[in-house]
Image (cartoon, rainbow, N blue to C red; front, top):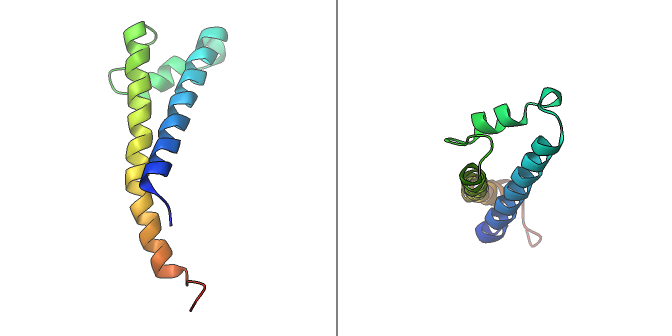
Length: 90
């Protein structure tokens, strides 16, 4: 059984760290060698490459995406786990 709190926080931090890595990568590598700005602008609503406000907004949106996925995934996983995985005592 999974904990919604643990999984949601884990995914939120994973997505936030990944966002920061993507932004750093996008700033270091020449734009012709990647599509980081296009990808992030397509995935994150209202995100514009790159300004301080855009960075903060992207970080918040990434965190919220992770939270949303954890909140949706955990109950589904726990339901299916109860249904399809027999317990030790049975």
